[in-house]
Amino acid sequence: MGNRLSKIYTRTGDDGTTGLADGSRIDKDSKRLEAIGCVDELNSIIGIVLAHDTPAGIGAYLNAIQHDLFDLGGELAIPDATIMTTQHTQTLEQWLDKLNQDLPYLKEFILPAGGKATSSCHLARSVCRRAERRCVSLDRDEKLNPAILTYLNRLSDLLFVIARTLSRAESGKEVYWDRKHSTNRTPS
Image (cartoon, rainbow, N blue to C red):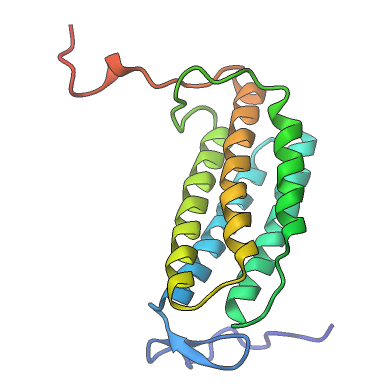
């Protein structure tokens, strides 16, 4: 493969537009670019999770997800392209089932807290939800491949289960929500 970027700055976006992979130009604050940006942000946060110590299997899952998200962003950058398939979501579901079978049943709400990898994974989960919302919004105006929405929905579930798994690897416990610690209660 030859050099793809010989020069990082092009000045073509100085007017508030950017180019899509098909050569068309759109506003930088368009719904499509918002969706692409959220997917890119999610991919970056997953990179942060990977920068922490993670169990080997989790690292392999997250690495594969980063590649999927790059493909998903590519599909968003090429209107009318189809890259994501139902197989992508099916793979996430297999991983979800595998990880979830070793976790205890949830009896309480879990706070997005814990060790560094756990907290980073919860951040990835919440950004995944935002990426999903941006894609749903875009889908109302320009029909997207349904596999994109399904994948992001399932990915947020998987990131939640990965965060639960990481909490056990880091500290051995999860941080549960406790109504008594809410600021609307008068401390004793």
